[in-house]
Every structure is written in structure tokens, then in C-alpha cells.
Length: 277
Image (tube, helix red, strand yellow):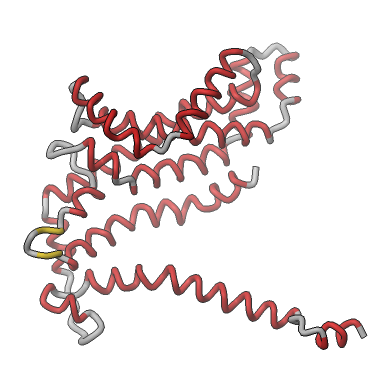
């Protein structure tokens, strides 16, 4: 009787809801997958046929060979990977201890630090660009690894310290208290009890931090020049007064997607597990 009343009321049954959900999920997947498919297709077309990518079966790897032979592009890939890795390592080192302090300690130092990162996080980081440009110029670190690393680390610390605080808040502090009673120091309790429990969260933050730095464009555009090219900036330089080299830009974009895709593929379980803590 209930099912009859439900159908008469115009509601969807379980099978209809599952079918609708499946169609919606398929539509979303197509929406996100189609641009990537078109990007790969464009990268495999010759320059003469790039505007007719939907016609013909002529494909070539010349665009990829051109990208891999370009020393500046190869150097940009190396620089981007190195900066992303270093920024992730240094950011995690500071963020883990910062989040632990915010979670476990109460006092003027913790409150001051919390207020500082709160204020800095509320300010859009696009407003940092011009002051950072003048600072890096005055310090003599413009267009260097240090000049590009420091802004990324600052942004990561301001954002990920909050996330690490939430992760440590979800970890029972009684085990640390037991370790302290057994004779552990505060640092000993941190390294032996709290840190191993937060490994999934740290792994998730490391993946997110690396991807953010790898894909970041604004800081790289303003704070780098000829000495430390990065892939997001070099990719944009395919736009010239003669037009836009779609095939080369697409090939570079596909190659830039590979490290991010592999990292996401192998790190997704840590991201999901870490965000559930």
C-alpha cells in the first residue's frame, strides 16, 4: 500500500533514483573528461590541421618531440618539480608542528600565532604579489628558487595549519597523556604517539600542497624571469603576435598533467583517508 501511494504521489522509486544518479554521474564525468580528451587530440594533430581537429585521421608526435627537445621547456619542468617538492617538504615540516601547537596548547603564543595565520589567510593572496615583488627585489632573491619558495610556503602554512589543527583535534590526547606519565617528554609524545597517528592526514596535505604548487601561476608569473622558468608560465608563452601554437601548448599541457595525474592516482587513498580523520 505504501509503494502504491508513493507511486501515485509522483515520487521516484529506488530504481529510478539509481538510474537518475547514474546518468547525472555520467554527465559530470563526460563534462570533466571531454576537455582532457580534446586536449590530447589537439596535441596529436599537425600544426596545419589543428583547427580541423575533428576531421581526418592524421596524427603525429612531432609536438611532443618539439617540447622534449626544447631546453627551456625541459628546464621549466625540472624547476616546477623541484619547487613543488621543496615547498611541500618545508611546508609540511612547519605545518605539522604548527597544527599540533594550535590543537594542544593554550596560551598567548598559540593565540598570537592563530590570530596571525587567521589574518593572513583572510587576505586574498593575490594582494601579496606586488609587495612580494618589491621584497624579493630588495633582498636580491628575485627570479631565484628562494624568492619563489617563500611565498608558496607562507600560503601553505596559513591554510594547512588550520587543517592540521582539525586533524590533531580528532586524535585522542589521552594516549599522549599516558606517554607523558610513563616518562616521555612532550617531544617524545609528539613523535611516538601523535605523529604516527597523523600520517594519513600528513600524506593528504602533502599531495594537496604539491599539486597546488605545481599548478600555481600568479606567483610564478610575477616572481620569476629567465633564470627560473616554470611550466605554467612557459606554457603561456606559446601565445605570440603571430597567433597561438595550439598543438605545442596542448602537448606541453598533456605532459604537465602526467605528474599530477600519477600523484593523484597513487595518493588518492591517502587523501580520502586523511580527510576522514
